[in-house]
Length: 214
Image (cartoon, rainbow, N blue to C red):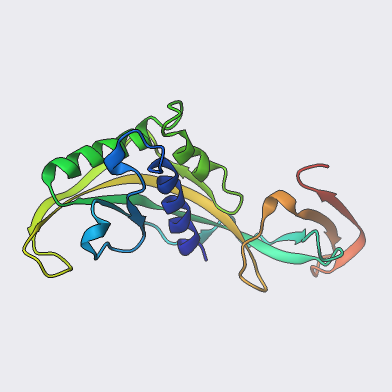
């Protein structure tokens, strides 16, 4: 449905921030992944995930929309719009408390200052400009969870792992084709308007137009 694509989108947005041009050298191209970091060389790391809080639900009651993919010669498909809600979570993981706290501060800046600060703008732009998932992140409130220091590592040493998680509320919607389950790219579809009789059968001419308008 949407989970893999949403987590991939969030991961990409964070990676574009902590790239080779990030001004703090030790945080350039760090390990950012939806998978738990299990190797010592992965640290410090940002573990990206999405925590759903409500059921996935349709955007309306019984609403079915029609569209025509631009490469299918006016073949009409049906799709539905779906809503989701939850939290984008970014777990900062490091081998020292200082490194964890410094990276945490940069993640908070990435979320809080992404509207105008050019250093963090790509994080917000990547999320908001995605053509498949319309996700809206609450950039004004950042939850802080699970600050911890735990002895033992995935690679079997007695090192201490330091963690803390930020969580930002997300609401969004996506559209999926009813016959294939695939995402519908709304930016390039043709909308088909039909007139139906009392039994739901199409009557009269259809009207087709492109979105966005050519």
